[in-house]
Amino acid sequence: MSDPLQVVCPHCDAVNRVPAARLGDRPVCGACRRPLFEGRPLALDEARFRRHLQASSLPLLVDFWASWCGPCRAMAPEFEAAATTLEPMVRLVKVSTEEAPALAQELAIRSIPTLALFRGGREVARRAGAMPAKQIVAWARQSAT
Image (cartoon, rainbow, N blue to C red; front, side, top):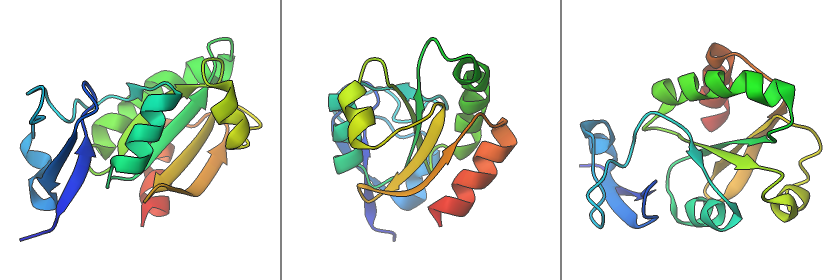
């Protein structure tokens, strides 16, 4: 039996313990009873981003973006498509640099879109620029190992 992973609920932010072998079994939150994975990125503000970063055992793939950014808007459906492939092994989230400027500054986000992969609360890889879904998936898989 595998050790349980901590998975933060995308709806209520409760921390759930899920055996790694059961991630693909459509687990639900013990607090709100909603699905822990929906195959789409979560939009997080700074406080929720920190909660997911600190409490989750899953790698966190973050799209730092802004609403005025054309390449960001063009990559949004590609990032969403990547979520259907990468979840439940990787949690995909979106953080608006307009709504979380202090976080963007703290993490030295210099251009957007920027993808950053976090594991164990620490950044392990970063890539700037828009990418198609297949490239996002390949890069995330390579970087998460």
